[in-house]
Image 1 (tube, one colour):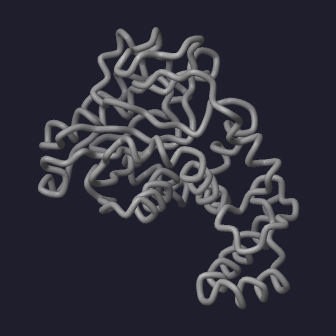
Image 2 (spheres, helix red, strand yellow; image 1 turned 180 degrees about the horizontal axis):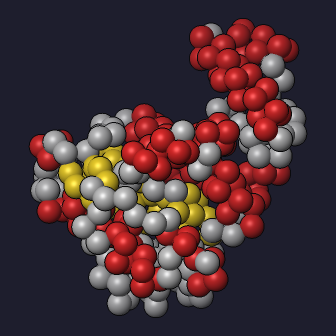
Image 3 (spheres, helix red, strand yellow; image 1 turned 120 degrees about the vertical axis):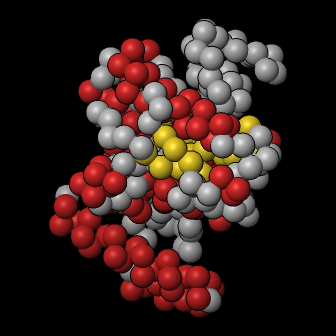
Length: 267
């Protein structure tokens, strides 16, 4: 799999460069030299010059139709909520952010895909999931009325070990497509914390307490911030980041993620 990724990633990157040059001619040339491959199943993609490197079957698996969801935290619930209504998953959480938009639930193929995006070999997949989020949730993203995009910060030690930062790649693509300013360094980690997957629910909240700081507060002062992360589980990370952004003068915070996890998904 690693050797296949070493072939697919540079080939896909070069193909996208050719397609951007002159889409009609170079897109056809790119398809001949580097036939498009799905970033998830590695199968053929039959639609030429597509910015989403995912086949139609994988798009359906990674972003199935959404059931009723909480408007506040994007958790799947059994009924259609009223606007502004909290659900049982976030009612007692005192979240500092106002709304969450998610591609899907943190289960099955989407869960496995997100775990792959946490490594350098998954950068093309991360970009494709972001494009899928834009395709499937553009209306909801527009309703957030965001004015600037900020990725959840990764501590430099973890970034050095992984070699990539999925939320930063995701945030950059969202900002570019939504035509919003991208504040990559506005938020930073002030302390190194354990991985959330290694912590209990209570420890997750304690781990993230006072773990974020804001640089260049003038960038976000008075603006509605779109905070970007890969997964929302307990909400502890996004809540701590939102608290720091609001303390620095942000007007409000809304969130975009690949997936929302609740219950057994969190484990």
